[in-house]
Length: 235
Ligand SMILES: [Zn+2]
Image (cartoon, rainbow, N blue to C red; front, side):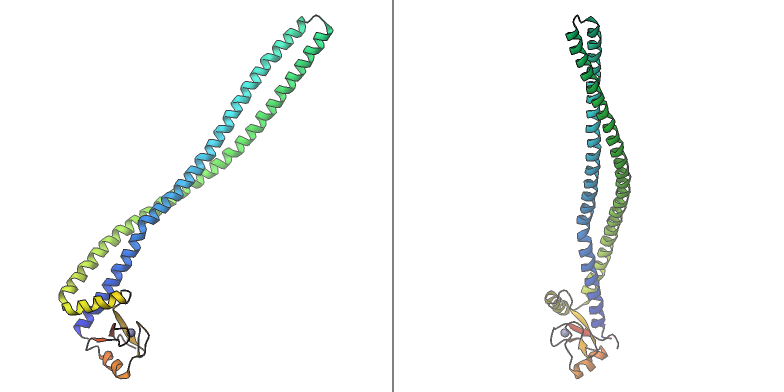
């Protein structure tokens, strides 16, 4: 094979690898940030659940205080019941006491209901907490995988660029420029395989005579349609 053609093939290989790695690594910071946001949303949702429980617990404490106050009033009324003079006063006080007892019962029912709500919510929070910890572990592991991939890719890019620089040094400047011109208008691909009588870059059929020449890989030949360098890699 013509040595320049061999160089071009490797040159393109390097260029495509570099572009691919650069594209891949460019997306990594965004991906890491997306993972961070997902985790933060889960954390906030969990905190909100915990805050709701605290609200319920505060309400419970209020109700308990209210019961204490109601019991105080009730015991005062019971003492007063012994001191009333008339039957009318007695009936009125009795009515007060009955009302007070009903009030206490109602509050105690509320407290019981509240306890059940809190118990259920605590179960939900416990599950959410376990789920969150699992998610956190997974996300941190994915993030560190991405970070180490990025570091590895960066090293690889440096190596590839070094090799590309060496090749560029070996290539005649004219050839490099021609390569860059074609690559810039052909989506970075300046070299194509000639196979089944056609250019694999643009899929246009090659003249039989041209194809025969390309098959020898002796000369630098370009496609008459897309201008890409052509090489033959076998049937
Ligand atoms: Zn072509």
